[in-house]
Image: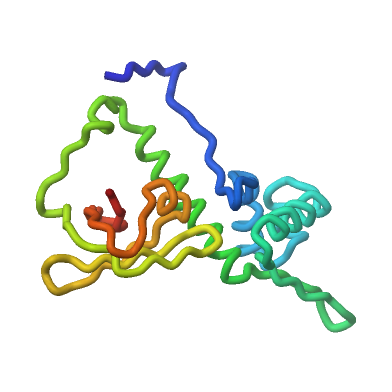
Length: 186
């Protein structure tokens, strides 16, 4: 049993990497969230309490790491100000970070984590199947599993998980269905 005290709580920092390079952490997620809500780099920088230059440089660093734009900017002119919006990749990075952060927050909020390592699952939410396709993206991978009953389940998991589990077409795997997501186990 894990002991916690008001002054001693489990904590961690999480970030997403691409090819071993950090891409987005808490500060980056705040920047992207600010851009998404404010539709402006200047307003996003003000909202998160960072300088415009820092925000711009941070975005450039992310784009260099992933190899494509995460923000589209529009110049202002005589008729109005410019703006900014997240690209589809920028939106995906933000969503993945939020999902990962939420999951880890939930795990860390558990006071008794002794059973997590040897967790047993009910038969209702554990399905055996065969991997029929693996599509690796920059950050995530889509794994399609054909179950023994005539159906297929698709799970979007991190590319790192696919590589760590060495998942490839033809592998026998277990599909674990949670209320919010579908995971792959091997």
